[in-house]
Image (cartoon, rainbow, N blue to C red):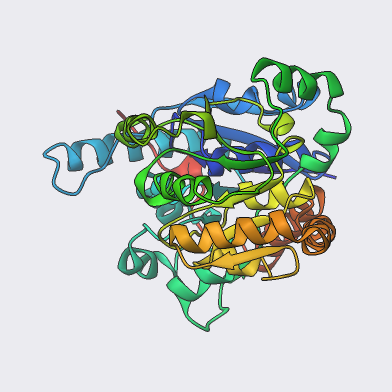
Length: 395
């Protein structure tokens, strides 16, 4: 059987949720059916997160997608040049399907879709993309995959035409099974982690993710007597654009005299061992989260999650079953942490609920759902575009 050649596009040279999702997807993609080619800004960023054998089975083309700022004088020049480069690649590769992993790639792929009418699928992963632009392009795109119902509602309302909701998956369960217990013990010894209750935060230290809330949470908990020993562990660093929030967090911890209640370990390439250490995970986003992979990873590790009740988070956390949903205020988090510290029956129930609810986010099953969308697009929509060989391009 002839394989379907699929080109995946990813624009950013920095690792984030979308890039990790793409790597997991490629690891589980059925290579007897699909032939993947990845166009991205940094090949190593994806390759290093693939299984060793799979990394040799996926072909990569490195291309740095330009920034297309609306008010930039280079907007038209960058757009035309980038579009021409992508057109030449598409003409040469003759793919059956284009998959846009990050919405911002779409600007430079428009002409390829328009001229060649190649079938296309786009992952809609956040709320930042222009609604107007998306709806203008809607007739050209074969299918939109929204990573949460919240995202679908935001862009498409109640309409399910040309869009599907498929949650992000995780393969943490299998990774934890293969985890060497020595790695966990090494971390405990390295950081002298003797506290009975370890509160985890995993993510970029940027304002909208709410890491500064941790200061007030710690202040409130530190004033309560007769608690089990506890510590807040922060795994992450400032964004690639700026680190002012990280600096502010460190500054305020020092000013408030809270050093003994915090451990800031910075960025970890492999967060897995920390999930074996956390007692609970805090997800403190101050604005709606499209879909937080860190939440489903915590659930996979049987860790209860205390999260703000915004965006796609409410589709993953059921209050009182696998975690607790709160308003984005420090006092709400503190009360919930206290509740878990003092109520072992509730804590155990949430741990069991976390493990049970994580099953539906198994990456192998999620990839199969996505593959069904690819095949639906490939079989349902005939190739009605121009033959790429018939278009001559010069740069």
